[in-house]
Length: 329
Ligand code: NAD
Ligand code: IPM
Ligand code: MN
Image (cartoon, rainbow, N blue to C red; front, side, top):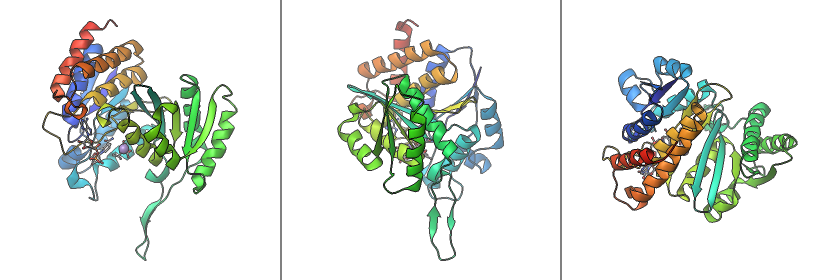
C-alpha cells in the first residue's frame, strides 16, 4: 500500500513529522511517498498542484495532507488553495467527514466538498460587478445526503440536515432530495435546520447533535465552530472520501502562519487525521482505534499550549508514541 504525503505550508511540515512517526510505527509496511503541494509548490514550480503530484495522488491508496496556505498568496492570482480545490475535484472526494468529540459531545459533520459556491461560475462583469454562484445538481445532493444517512445509521441514528431553505434555491433542492432519500432510511430520524440556528445550537448545545449533513460552505464554517466547542482547531481531524478512489486526509485547521516554525503547534489534529487514514484509507480499524486512544491519553498527560499546557509539538508526538507502546492492538 502507498500513502502520498503532502506536508503543506506553515505548521504543516512540523505536524506532519509527528503524524508520520505514529503512522509508520503502526503500519511499517506502508510505502510513504512525499510530493510538493501548496505554497511550497508555487515557489518551486509556479503552480500549487504540479502534474507529478496529482498523478501520484491518483495512483495512491490514500493521501495524507498537511494544511496549505501562506499570507503572501492570500489574494494572489495563483494561490495554494486553488491547488487544494482542484485536488479534491480530481479525486472526487465529495464526502468530508469532520468529527468533533468532547465530554458529552460526539458529533460528525458530513460536509459536501466538491460543489456549491466553491465550484460554481464566477467572474467580473463589464460594470465591475463580481460574482460567485452556488450550484448543485440533484445527483450531487443525493450522494452526500445518502452518505449522511448511512453514517447516521451506523452511529446514533439521528441526522440533522442543515440548509438555508428560507432563502436559497439550492437549499430547497437540498431539502427535497433529503426527504426523498429519507424514505430508504426509516430507522434514521431526520430533522431539517436552518444554518443560522444550527450555528447558534452548535455554540450553546452541541451535545444535541449526532450527524450533521450540509453543503460545502456551511460545512466549512460550522466545522470550525464544532472544533471550537470541543477543544479547538488543534484537535480536529478530517477525512475526504469518494466512493472508491483514494481519500484525502487533512486536519480541519489551516497553516497557522502566526505560530509556524516555533515548534509549538498542536499536532493532535494531524495525528488523529492519520488515524482516520488508517481506518478509512487502509482499512486498519484496530490500529486506528489504538492511535486514537494514544492521542487522547497523550493529550491528558502532555497538553500543548493551545490547551493550556506547555508541551511542544515534538513532546506531544513523543507522548503519543509512548502511549502507543502501552496500548494493546
Ligand atoms: P488557521 O486554522 O491556520 O488558524 C486559526 C487560528 O488557530 C490561529 O490562531 C492558529 O495559530 C490556530 N491554530 C490552527 N491550527 C493549530 C494547531 N494545530 N495548533 C495550535 N494552534 C492552531 O486559519 P487562518 O489563519 O484563517 O488561515 C491560515 C491559512 O491556512 C490561510 O492561507 C488559509 O487559506 C489556510 N487554510 C488551509 C486549510 C487546509 O489546507 N485545509 C484549512 C484552513 C485554512
Ligand atoms: C478547509 C479550508 C479550505 C476550505 C480552504 C483552505 C480552501 O478552510 O479545509 O476547511 O475552505 O475548504
Ligand atoms: Mn475551513
